[in-house]
Length: 356
Image (cartoon, rainbow, N blue to C red):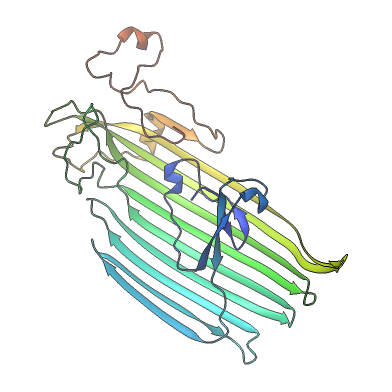
C-alpha cells in the first residue's frame, strides 16, 4: 500500500519499496468511507503527488443502536462473513461504541493458492463536554495465505505458451503470514459556532513473514517442453508508521466581508527493519507439466547459498547486478575465464527482485 494515503486525515505512506512488502492489502471492514482528494497532495501534507490523495475514514460510535450482518459467497470457494454492531453505551448517549468482526476464506482460479483474512475492530467516542469529543479506535488484521508469485513465462519472441489459466509454477510450501495492528486517537473541541480545534493521530505496525518458491527462465519458440530455473525467497518485513494532523478552523468578518481560516500542521514517521534473501534451487521446472514439489530450503541455506540478500533498513536502494549463479544466455556458453577473474556472468532474465 505504498502511496499518497491518509487515515482520518493523517498522512502515512504505509508500504514498502518492493512488491513483497506490499503484499498486505488492508481490509475495508472498519472504514466508513473513502474520500478521493483531487489536486496537489502537498496542499494537504508536507509533500506528495500532484494528482491528489486518498483518505480512509474509519467507522465511529453510533448514536442509535444498530447491528448489521453481512455474508457472501463467490467463485473459487470465496466465503466471507461480517458483523457490525454499534450504539450508545450509557443512558445520555455521551459514550458511543462500535465493534466489527470479519472472517474471509478464499481460494483462487490458479492452483496452490489460498488466503484467510481475520479482522477485529473496536471504537469508542466520548463527549467529555458538550463542546469536546474524544475518540479512540483499535484494529487487528491477520492474513494467513499461500501465494503464487511470479506469473507465467512466454516464448522467447513474446508469444503465448497457451498454458491453462490455473497454472502456478510455484512451490507447495509457499507461505505468507501477516499481522497488522492500527490505533487511532482524535480530539475535537468547539470554541463557539465559528471556531474549532481538531487533532487526529494514527499508529500502525505490520509484521510479515513470507517464504516462497518460483520458476523463471526463457522458453524456446515452438518448444513443447522447457527447463526453467527454480528459486526460493524469504522475507521478514517489520514496519511501524505513525503520525498526526491538527488544525484550527474558523471564520471572522473584516472589511465588510466574511473570511475563513485554516491553520494547522501534520507530520509522520516510518521505521522499518526488512531482511530478505533469494537463492537458486536444484532441479528445474517444466511449465508444460508443472510440479509444485520444490526443495524446501532452511533459514541456514539462505545464509550459505544466497544469490541475493539484503538488510533493507541498512541499504534502502538494492544494487542492480546480475548473478554469478545464473545459467548462461540461451545459445551462448558462459565464459569460464570470467569466473576465474571474478567477473559476473550475464543472466538472460534477471530476477524479479526488490528494487529492480
